[in-house]
Length: 372
Image (cartoon, rainbow, N blue to C red; front, side, top):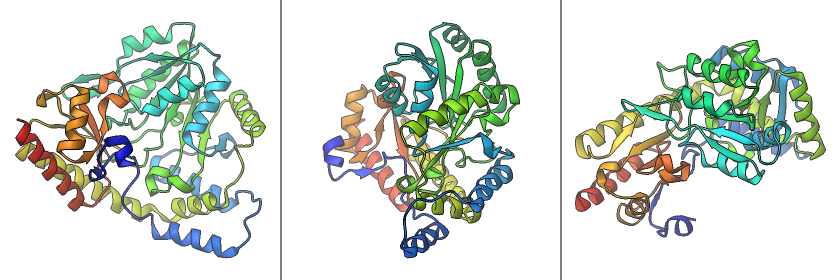
C-alpha cells in the first residue's frame, strides 16, 4: 500500500484516519463474547443498545436523540450517498467547504451531481466559513444540498453553535438540505465544544440530517454501523425506503455488540485517549516551534488530524508530496487531496505513540534542513 501510494515502503504511515491504539478492552471483550455465542443469524438491535446510544449523546453532548429519528446504514458515507439520491437529481449542485474530506467529492461525482465550492477562509491562522459566498451559492435554484464536516476534516475546526446556526439558516431560507458529517464529534479538545447540528433547534433539525458513528472514537471502523438522525418525518421515510430497497439497513451482530459496549462503558477510555492526543498536539506544536518554524501547525480544535502548512519550504504541491515521501520518508495526505485550496499543506494523523510521532518529526527536520 505504501509503495502504491507513496512509492516508498519505508515511509512511516500517518495518512489513514484511524488510530494506532487498541480499541477499548470492553469493546474487544464484547466481540469475543459475541463470537463465542456461535450463532450469527439475523438479529434486531436490543433495548440496551439504544439506551447506550441515547445516554452517550445526552451525557457527553447534551443532546437527547429521539430514537424514532434514527436510521441505520453501514457507514456515514452510505448515509450521505442515500441522502444525495433522495434530495437531488443528476446535474444538481451540492455545496462543500474545501479543503475538506476528499470522499465528499467522490460521492458527489459518483452520483452525477455537481460540486459547488464554498471555500473556507484562513483568518489569523484560523479557518472560517465564508457566509457571503455561501449565501450566493445556496441561492442558486440548482443547489439542493450542503455537506458540512463537524468537526472539520482536515483543518480541525469545531464549528461553534453560532457558525452552525448561521449556515443552517442560509440553507433553510433557500430550501437546501444540510447534511452534517459528525463522525469526529467525540474527538474535541477543551475548551471547545462539539455541537450536534440537529440539536440546535427544531427548525434546523427539520431541514437537515446528522450522520454519526463511533468508528473514529473507538477505532472500530472495520466492524461498525452508522446512524443518520433525521427529524423530518418525510425525509426519514424516504431514507428508510431507499435503505430498505437496497437492503443496507440490516443489523450486523458484531457492530451492535461493539457499539453497545463502547457507548455504555467506553467513557473513561475516551477521556484518557483525549488527554494523550492533546499531549501529542502540544508536543508537535512545541517541536515545530523550536526546531522547524518553517512548518506551521494549524492547531486542531478537534479530530486527531494535524493540518500542517509547508508553504515556507517553497515547493509546489507535487514537489512537496515527493519531498515528504522520498526525502522525509513520511506518508502524509497531500493537502491537494482535499481540494486545490489545500495545496502547500499536508494532513498528519497524530493518533499514535509519542515515540512514533517524535521519529516522524526527526525525519522531517533532517530532510527540511537539507532542503533549506
